[in-house]
Length: 225
Ligand code: NI
Ligand code: MN
Image 1 (cartoon, helix red, strand yellow):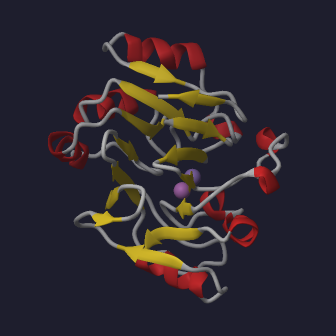
Image 2: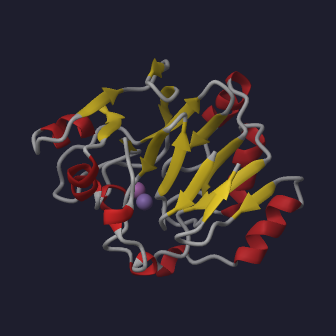
């Protein structure tokens, strides 16, 4: 599976011939200025919550690609008024898409749109494919719910925030990786803004000390998992 980092909490994931894009925030992100959103492929855009640093480029990329959005009911309704098609969900069970089964799961955060509109509850995604399973937590604090996600799923890897202040920091993310019983963590939501600047080596060491592997992908780079 190919994973590309577009900065902040935005990743492209190729799965079963489909291109998934998570939480696009690229054109306002100075750290991602080398990324041209016109070159991003997307069949589906998965949106964890309504904050600007997760939805900034949804409209432009759906116009370019015709991608459908997958998010909570309120966010999908909000975008449908702009003519963007999507599939609304809420917390509960899986829905089968043509690339994998997707479940929306809880996150401890908030979810208002930049203009103040109600964005439903913030969430994360559990993606269960034929031969791979991963977790994209979205912005969240550490929560005991993650223990349940780990009991019910066999995650190959997970995207977790590590920047602190708005989300989990390194210490909480290490504990989260234990709760979800996953050894391969891809870090997100760090270094974009001054309050979430981290020491990358310290972060890697903290995970390694618990037998976990933290991957920090360069913006614009891809890895294969
Ligand atoms: Ni947020
Ligand atoms: Mn955020």
